[in-house]
Image 1 (tube, helix red, strand yellow):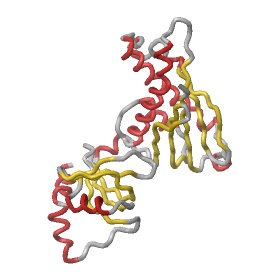
Image 2: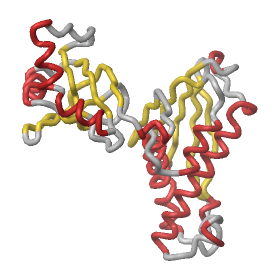
Image 3: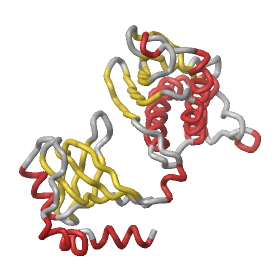
Length: 266
């Protein structure tokens, strides 16, 4: 199976606007990305074969160093590179395992990228990859393709350091409804090319989502426990309407009571 990872960088790094990717700027980060891929592959080999990880876990399991990212193309007029994920086996190595390894490792790599970008510890080498990306990268998009079919995508707008997860916060954004349930009331939202996520909501929010399948704007309370909850919701991409003066007190002390308590407890 042919496995590819497509990476798009947007921002103000020299060369990106002209469709060029500077090795001086990106090579340290790309080396970390390859190390992350091999570390993920090493863990998969250990789980599949029961082999040792190496002295104190620092070395790759035998065969993991065969994993490679081979750049096959750089798209003109934008900072997009495509790399084939390969595992070139040596005599005596498990061919069936290595046939499957590039796809599994690539998908796990994107899982790590999605989690680490959200401040959730998942793979330390991916964390180092983000730290070594050059200043000026504003957005990142990742795709895994297997035999030409896209199987996984991740869109990174902001890399959140782990320590930011210690504090709750508020986010306002536009998303597409992807699902809803009544007990307990929750709605599933998708932002741009990201993965759908579930959020706590009210019965009224659920009913609104079920009636209107168009884009909605939401104000969300985020917490370290990943128990994000929708505070306000309106249909369409326009600004949230102002809360009528007569309902302001009820909105704060009744509708947002649990949210305020959660913030106070933090």
